[in-house]
Length: 525
Ligand code: ADP
Ligand code: ZN
Image 1 (cartoon, rainbow, N blue to C red):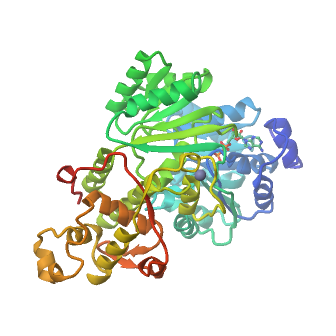
Image 2 (cartoon, rainbow, N blue to C red):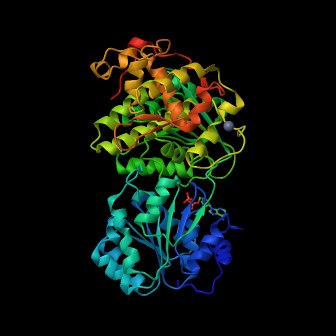
């Protein structure tokens, strides 16, 4: 179905996709590509990134090539497009040779509006040659944060996508992601040679999602059940768990409680996975209990809640996972219950992974930021958006901390002790060492440095090691201290710690319901 290049974007929006109006910044992005200029689009999940490249690809003569990392996601998109009457196809390993040949033929004939390709397939010389013989009107690089080595979805093939710029210098490229921190953005720009691209950033705020975060060593499942029964009876939702085993236990347990819950994880057979996903997508009120393998490519607008029975490993992951709730803009909830065991387990996973040291440290910092979000007594939304470099001028009124201010304690004196410990030990030691000094632990390193003779040695015995670590995380989150990313995670004071040290400012922290007894506390690292 060849489409006339004269078709206006807004006509395609209405007639092909059935929507009345563009969302910000879809129209501008489309105009950018129509003018043959590159674009970098940072928009939260559910924001409407796909139309940004689908519409110009349809509007222009030739084919828009979409690079997408997940085959399942690709197939969903292709099916949806075909149903809307768009000539779309995918080239990937799950197609038969005959299907692939037909797709290639259609491409060369100029009969395809959109062609989805996995990066590894695209990078094959054969595919690049094929594309050079076709008329490509744009390249869309979806999930562009996969190019970031520090991100949680790094894919080495993404690094090679810069060949697109070299081999097709006249074809506009659009990179899209829902990860917006400035570091990832810089990496995408640099690694995909997008220095000339127009940049579009939409707020990451999802005002219709209400955030709740609870902690405690037990009672998570019952708390979940109460949450679902009281607030989401009959609603569709996703429950995330860390392990496959736990997914199965929780799904079975919820079924036993009379709820329509289904498991989803990579260890299930492909048929069962597909079946469960389909029921979730098509039926009303299904609850999917899943590992994080579930979700990319899920396009269900009326998911009313996303629950986490474990701590996500980073704020990025938390944001993406909770972002699957309320895509229709109606009220939705993100609910989490985590325990200190999760923290220990995640730290072990990081320690025992194959990654190199800098990466492990980066993952450790990301986990710390996640924990700081959990422990904050401030507005969750302000903290969350702050992490992504965005500021919200006043507390949101739609998170647990805003709705029910938590019990707190005045941590000013403790913070002053922590800051002094950093200062007196020469601003080069990591959290563990500093905690050891505050608690006067006998450690040959401390003696060697002569730090057992400092005034700060042993001045922190009123708090447990975990409480001190939580405090250091807060100092970090609030920018009162900084950490060396190069070497050993050494901490130093930042200028903004001065008012606190001079007693001109207070620090207030969340009171944990059940402080961890000292003797049971775990020592990471
Ligand atoms: P993203 O890729 O940013 O996560 P999608 O492109 O999947 O988001 O879009 C999310 C949802 O919003 C989809 O259901 C899509 O059809 C819908 N959508 C996108 N643009 C519009 C629009 N202009 N008007 C109404 N709905 C839209
Ligand atoms: Zn709030």
